[in-house]
Amino acid sequence: MKIAVCIKRVPDSETRVKIAADSKSLDEAGVKFVLNPYDEFAVEEALRRKEKAGTGEVAVICLGPAAAQETIRTALAMGADRGVLLQADRIPADPFESAKIIAAELKGTAWDLILFGRMAIDDYNHQVGPLVAELLDLPCVTTVSHLDIEGTKGVAEREIEGGIEVVDFPLPAVLTADKGLNEPRYPALKGIMAAKKKPLEVKPVQPGAGALEVVALTPPPERKAGRIVGEGAAAVGELVRLLREEAKVL
Amino acid sequence: MTTLAVLEQRDGTLRKVSYEVVTAARRLGASVDAVVCSSAGPEGCASAIAERAKSGGYRAVVFAATATGKDLAPRVAAKLGVGVAADITDLSVDGGTIVATRPVYAGKALQKVRVLGEPAVISVRPNVFTPPPDAQASQVQPETLSIPSPGRVVVREIKPAPAGTLDVAEAQIIISGGRGLKEPANFKVLEELAQAFDGRAAVGASRAVVDAGWRAHADQVGQTGKTVSPSLYIAVGISGAIQHLAGMRTSKVIVAINKDKDAPIFKVADYGVVGDLFEIVPKLTEEIRKLHG
Image (tube, rainbow over all chains, first blue to last red; front, side, top):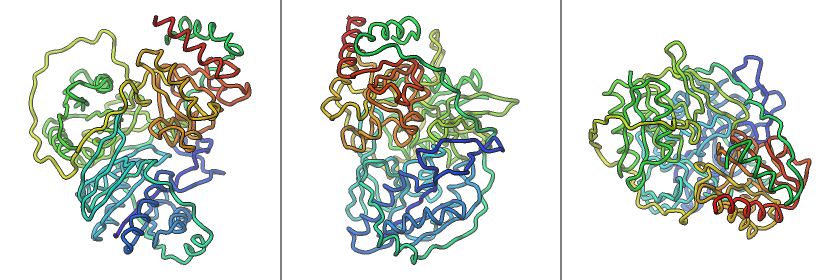
């Protein structure tokens, strides 16, 4: 099994967002960056598939700044074999520009699987995976929460509103991983040490401007301060009255 | 200029979010064409929609940011050579340019973007673009698009969720539970409250209880789950971690029920009740049943 996992460096989900001086981007001072949580499921799945096959390679590919080498090392510490950093100072606002760069790197290698997380928890685009699949003309299944592969045939389950869709697809394919697909391993000390010696290639890239231009990044509107209606079951009557008469949601 | 609205159906019935897609599309101009995919796989649908988008000379193609739309929109966008302005919550035309607002960092910030693609490809967050109450049916000239090939990805079956359960991403009312519920079986009190809302409410969950295996990931509200905008969100036994607040802060009205009066959830809640949820929630269920009695 030859598997590529495309990962992203993102601010940790507990980050308090501060807007930078350009009023268009995140102020990164003091922000802790991590491997995108959904990408952890993709890395884990790739490792399990390779382990099951008994042979193969797991390569991690990341578009990001120089500091994303650390993110790649996290995936290498989990057990991936090698990393490629497509180094750019800024991730383009138009995901199609990111997809073009990643697709160009993937093209020309006979991958059995190309895995992504279903979305990055920073820009919430949930689309680089399927965009890359289109650019490489590969079948694609998104938000996979269960996966069976026999030879070159795959069956995936994906959550849709009000149910689970069961999908047949042929390999090679692009899949995006959802929570529930597996339980990602924590890098062991041995893995962390080994990761330092694994190959990590850095390739500078120049993303295009694309068709989405950020005009502003602003804090969300503050919610008006609410009030404590009361304590215990005795407050329920007043709560229901307020929901009916004041908030008008009942 | 006309906009192409991509609608969703299941078992022959148009889904509620499709009316919202048309409502959003009309922000760009009165003339809207609508396309709905029958039972073909995602690749066939994407090819047919992209072909139509090209031949029809549309200014924009608008999808719903649902599981289906999030899967379909990028496939179509790639064929049109652009990215998707995804999961937007506001849409306007400014000096001839389409401008969209999208929550990023799970709603901790709002990103305003100019959508310069021609056509622009957009997906809209469910529950945001409410259709006008006086909407009237217009003259429709039906047309059938052919799907060139069904594609390599084939939907074998859809396993429906148990009858009566509603998806948190689409529900008008969400009752979410956290660690304060103490054990998985106690979610029954929230399910009973949800039922009292006559099928309009879904039961959500915090990351803590999903990670503990008490509830399915499909029910998780927050930055690594679903970002929701219901008209009423009731947080029960949830302290209010930043990643959870990010996922539900755009709810129209928030109610918090928690025994700790200093819990951060009370800072975003419109109405709070402090105390034992096992006394408060059943009482609330009783009151709601009376209203619907």
